[in-house]
Image (cartoon, rainbow, N blue to C red; front, side, top):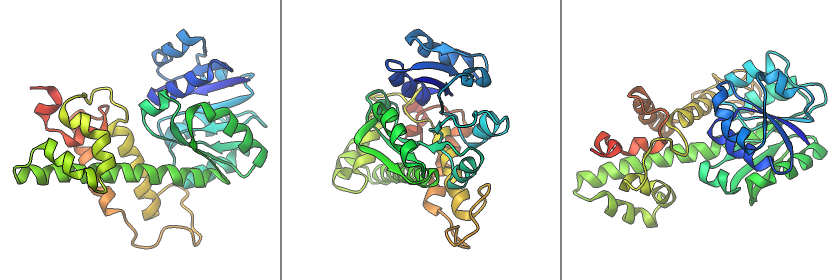
Length: 298
């Protein structure tokens, strides 16, 4: 199949690489040098998003967030009539509804996981559209990205967006929990290693196992799996959805309750934004767990 793939950042590149063996890919990225790995793997590179989409049988987008989707796809009316649009971008449920209203062939396909699972074809993947035939087609297309047990078809892009935001809320809040557990351990004279071990039998065991290599210094946060800026962006989507400030937020009974908020997530967001403010936005979000000396190796 002739596929246009728009957005070849860290995650987009890994997703696109899985498709090259079986499909004819034309890729585009706003920063052109980020297409180099895909060009070397055999993809064609377009100078503009419109050029990439010309002649495509299906369009995939992997952009940084809703604003980039609106600018690249919605505002210029980029998707030709009848051509499926598979969007892996993390967006709010309201955004997904708006995209589906604007482009009837929209399929929300957010992925859950970081670069390691992406490389290994072990992500969680939601495929959301009310069109049964299109959903089946896209499930088959994206199967190389996914752990088969975590490849889930749902009946709307909105529901797929909710699933992705729930996953990232759990990740952000548990990382903040680990940050505070490490602080408690330090205050009691407990080493970071001992704290990580003690957390093995708790609800923080998963995040302690995932981020333990960063805490121990076995991995650097530079060029990490999931950047602080990216998860902070997602946290804002979650908070805006709950508080009712998201663009086009639902106004019916399924909308946010008055006075709703996400205080635990706001705590995680404050930690992330503190790191972003001092220049660590592109580092792995494990940066919130480390002191500057640990991060730089000093």
